[in-house]
Structure formats: structure tokens, C-alpha cells
Image (cartoon, rainbow, N blue to C red; front, side):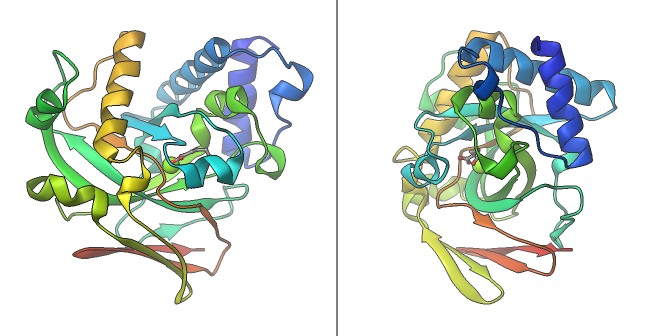
Length: 255
Ligand code: OOG
Ligand code: MG
């Protein structure tokens, strides 16, 4: 299969919620360059169907996540408007394969990002730093993949919710904010954003560097998800999940 064929296969797997076999099985030399080309193809397919690009995501930026999926490099992908989860957190499991949820820190830009990629410049362009969660749902059987597979699959992106509590004024404290993830009232995961490269802002800088290399600019209003802080938590229809952050609890009700 060439890149457009792989993109079409993964696009259909997502829409039909039917898993496919990881491509590196058949083709061990599937390269990272080709994987990112496939990912670009996925974005084009989504845009052609009327979806909108809302931002980008970093993945595998914490040791917990890397161990979770046994892939030990950071990756990046894109976010779509259709993947936004509303405040009430209603999430359908019918159109997903084997979804999991993970707590993350998100940032939102108030202007197009231009200039040198420094912490100072990023701060000037930021509208806010928010509590969030991401839903990941690998399109591969048994949630099993190698590095190139997961890149091609848009880093398992499946949904996200961004909270309302803006931590920008206390940015220095963000690495040590705590997060508690409960499922049906029982604590399953706890963590701190420092799990993400020591500071999620470093994940933002890294994403901007990738975009610059690819000749893409981050536009006003766009979001960056900085990467899962804890192991991701699998859920099924009927599960009620809460992601508790200082000042705000986010909810996910699986139906
Ligand atoms: C890969 C996606 C990684 C994160 O935050 O680390 C990711 C996966 O877990 O399937 O979104
Ligand atoms: Mg994630």
C-alpha cells in the first residue's frame, strides 16, 4: 500500500470503528517520514469531509504513557473540531474501537505564533493554560503498534475536552498541580503535569519546532494538547469518569 492508500484505510477504520492490522507487520521498513505523510493524508481527508483543524497534540511525552504503549519516543498529531467533547462529557463508545482517557494540560493561542521558538515568545502568544483530558482510540487491533504505525494513525487521537480554569497566571505552579482520575467513584490514576517532560511548556516548544520544520504555522485560537500525564484508562458504555484538577473537575459519561 502507498501512503494515500494507508491514509484511506486508517480514515475508514476510524469512521467505521473497525480495527486494522498494524502496517509495520507487513512492512517493517515503514518509515517515520512516510508515517507523517500518511498522517497529513488523514488530515486532508477529514478537511475534505468538512471537518476543521482546531490544533495539535504531542504524545508519549511522559514515562507513564511510553510504558503504557511500549513506544519510547515522542510523537505529534492534529486535532479536529469533530473530536471536541462537550461540557457534559457525553462520549459514545459505538463509534470507537477501544477508547481510553488520559489527563493532560492544554494551551490555547490568542494570536498566530510567529518568531523564534522561546518560552518568552510562546508566553506572549498564549491565551491560556487549561486542564483537559484526551480520549485515545488506536485504530490497530489490540491497541498494538510500533512508532510509525501510531504516527500514521494520527497518534490515536479520538476526542478531547478543555476545561475553563485558566492557569496562565500561575504558570510556574503548573508542573506541580495535581490531577485525580476516578472511574465510577474509584480512584484509578493520580499524577502531576511534571510527568510531561518536567514541564508541559517544554512539550509546547517541541510541538512548535516540529510545525516549523514542516512549514506549518500555529494559528490564533488553536489548541495544543501536551500529552498524557498518567496511564490511559480504558472505558466502556455506562462508565462515569471524573478528572479532578485544582478549581475544576471534568466529566466523561460513556454511552
Ligand atoms: C498514543 C497516543 C499518545 C499521549 O498523550 O501520550 C498520546 C496512544 O496512547 O495510543 O496521546
Ligand atoms: Mg494524549
